[in-house]
Image (cartoon, rainbow, N blue to C red; front, side, top):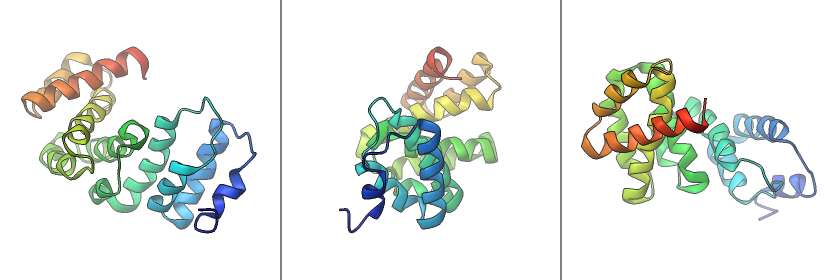
Length: 166
């Protein structure tokens, strides 16, 4: 893998902080493509204790900028579905709640089957809270527009964001 991904050797033995890794992977995604950076992130020697879900968001955010809604096809379940979260939250923040049908279509394309589909809506819930300026009743109302089961997942993500996010 070192010959396919020279970054693995480059990262070996370095004890980079989260901010240094964020800069490194953002630059890599911009230079060689977010899909490539995502593959490197999956196998890179990252220091213990690094929040890999947030690192997945770092690369996912660049993927969204590069590929838009189609970036969801690159996303895997790695890093607790951070990549698909970046895509659907990016869509919502860019285009507003009128994009919910497009988000539904994107979540159906997320690799990983029903687990990935439900986690896509969970991730959307995190973004819904930010989209509604942290107004929980508005966030719940918006989540309920996504469908019965989807709404439950979305609300779960919203509540989790209140507890541990922000």
